[in-house]
Amino acid sequence: MSSTDARPALTLDALRLTFHPGTPDERVALDGLSLRMNEGDFAVVIGSNGAGKSTMLNAISGALQPDSGRVLFGAQDVTDLPVHRRAGFIGRVFQDPMLGTAPALSIEENLALAQRRGLRRGFRLALGRGNRERFGDLLAPFGLGLETRMAVLAGKLSGGQRQVLALLMAAMQKPRLLLLDEHTAALDPGTAELVMQATRRIVDEGGLTTLMITHNMQHALDTGNRLLALNAGQVRLDLDAQAKAGLTVEALVQRFGASDDQLLRA
Ligand SMILES: Nc1ncnc2c1ncn2[C@@H]1O[C@H](COP(=O)(O)OP(=O)(O)OP(=O)(O)O)[C@@H](O)[C@H]1O
Image (cartoon, rainbow, N blue to C red; front, side):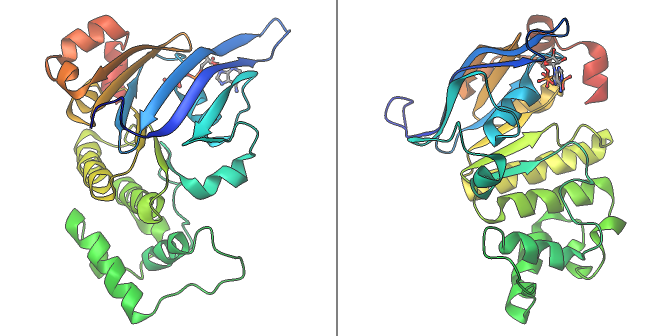
């Protein structure tokens, strides 16, 4: 599908967002940022500290309101929709493994909760045999053995296991957009690799339109069909899969501002 006939899933139109406007601490975090994501795009977002990556995700989710500009899902302008009204069509996984799952609920209860997302309140967690089998089938491909421990509390899992569970939960209702906010940054390199493999699998199988922030340049090159580099609140580079295939980690680090310590942190 060419970018001209593909359907837009998300459009950011000239977003401007200023922290502490009119004070000595004024900071322009998004400076007329524009971006169009087509259905099924998996874009990896890189950029040095303070480039505006998290602010962009927060403007998309509705956690932050832009000074001007528009956010559209498909043709729907959601700029004025509060965060809870957008939550139904956005899945999000954060850097902190504690945030994506409910620690006091078991693995299967967490999955049942995600399954019921967007439905009316006052539910009982649906944990019939059919669901247990389905959840087991969902977990088994990741090789973590979670399918045999579904009654274990999520709070007892390792960071990597929780991130995989959080990914499955975020993807379960096929959100119109999946936001991954440095979701491997708090993990050791081996676990981060495992979670990245799980990420690619979940995004591919769901055909999910996805934005993933990372400081890991190797993951940025290995993942998705698009690479975006942000700088000073704007998209400074937007490469398709073919264009990024010729890049190396060294070239990316040199050109787009990630320092060695950021690479180590990733
Ligand atoms: N809550 C806030 N209050 C004031 N300034 C903020 C706030 N959040 C972000 N900023 C500023 O906005 C700019 C963009 O920050 P943002 O966190 O979006 O960058 P980032 O690219 O995600 O960086 P990092 O890689 O360090 O997470 C920076 O100058 C930052 O200092």
